[in-house]
Length: 443
Image (cartoon, rainbow, N blue to C red; front, side, top):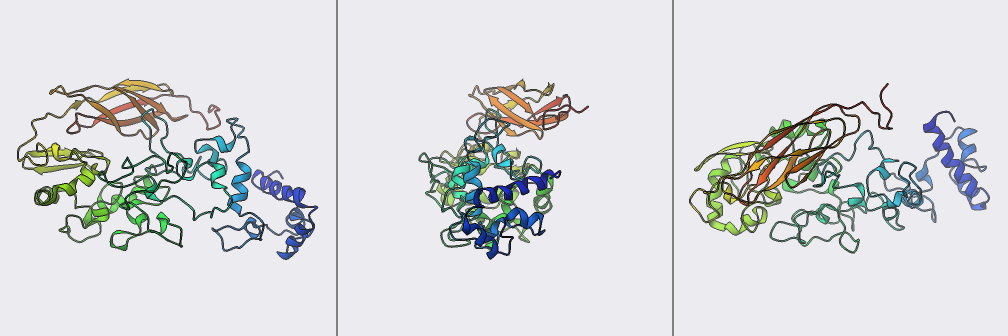
């Protein structure tokens, strides 16, 4: 067929006829569902009747039961294609460790369906930190016989294993599998999906609910577009409700007034913002141990206590600026959880930087200093919109996306062991020949 989209579909049903045509049971199945007994291809080309794969291959995504003895659609597709070689890489699809294997069929190369906080996570070397396989496993694992497609999926707790004081060794992981290749079982249910939801034995994020019986997706976003998303339209709801992108963390996004609580928020959270500056002292004096769950056993902050918004807050020690991603702990203002005095430590200072790229990776030296002589650890805070940034010591490497020309930027900061520095901005001018995704230059 000259229409490529139709041609591969016709090829699939002709393959069925070629492999099963001599089986007498095959003709009987065709008649059972009102198809031409001569085969699927005649059913389409002669009778003009479309074929629904899930008629024979059961799928939990559709109200069909399939045929006994015929593997479910998800098993048939993935177990077969696991042993197919990707012509662009020369690898079996089962051996691929990145999303390109999945994007050969699933939407994504253009639509970027995996576009949330996890899909956009970048490792320190600038590579993508999380792939489809990080949650679902390789092709053969997805196609394992007996697996219930659309239901047998990992839960949040396979990576988010608990607070700073009670977890599986890390607060969060970048894949769901333990050292034995099995889904990690969290020791703490703080971030867990609802058990037996939607069915006994299955626990899915998209059906789970939490604070105020709100669906988890209401605050965190949909499964493959967890807030904040790289697609601006995904962030519009968060921005409209609380004034900034990301997980809903501002109580007044839903409540008419700021609730007076210490642990009554989602996942045992307290309110955030200026009101908590005045309220947190009483809470800490009453039970400072509870603060460690998010702020760490050393009270210096963890990934759970990152600021989610750009805030300038008035404290008894003066105005403190917390940028998105700032690690909040007791040493940002006073000298630890039991001190009434200001921290004498001077935060590190980082400098903005400029760079140019001719469409290729470019190394960028980053400048950071600390007047107290503390050892500094740098990190990339926000990734560029049109590429990725890796970091080794004090040298960042910017990797532009193929074919992009224009302005790009990322941010970084330095940690001195007590508090974060100011936020450094790196601006990059990218000048490259425009290249299509297939590698051809724009004429």
